[in-house]
Structure formats: C-alpha cells, structure tokens
Image (tube, rainbow, N blue to C red; front, side):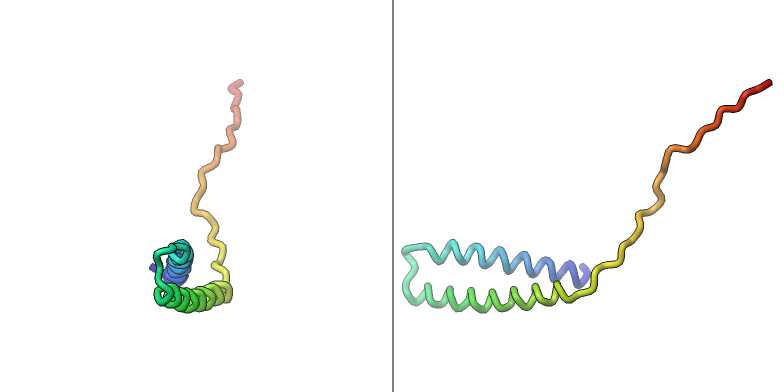
Amino acid sequence: MTEPEALDQDIRALQEWLRCAWMQLGDPSLTAFSRRELRNQMKQCSADLRRHLRAASERPPEPHVPPGKTFAMPQLRLLAWS
C-alpha cells in the first residue's frame, strides 16, 4: 500500500469513527462521565482528522499517466482490380 492510499484509508477510518461517536453520543443511557470521555476522544479524533486532511491537501498531485495501448478500428482501403 502506498503512502497516499494509507493516508486516504486513515481519513476514511477517522470519519467513520466520528460518525459512530456522534450516534453513540445521542444514547440516553450514557453516564455523564462516559459522555465527557467520548467528547474528549472526539476532540482528539477531530484534531487527527484535520492533520490528515491538511497532509492530503499538501501532497503534490499524482502525475497523469496516459493509458496503455488502445486499440482502434484500422483504416480500411478498398482496392480495385482492373
């Protein structure tokens, strides 16, 4: 796995974790202590996500690689016999 792919995977994982954390934060059975701990973890995760997004935006764009050989319809000529 290349470095940009790993960075993209980390970003997706952090986004998914935050999405699940927001859903869990709405649970009424959560104690005040658990809620506070979850919010602290969410703050740390948000900071990590911002750092990863900044790194992704600062990486140089990947060079455009032309596609390999493409097969096209050959030009046909009609030959007449005289």
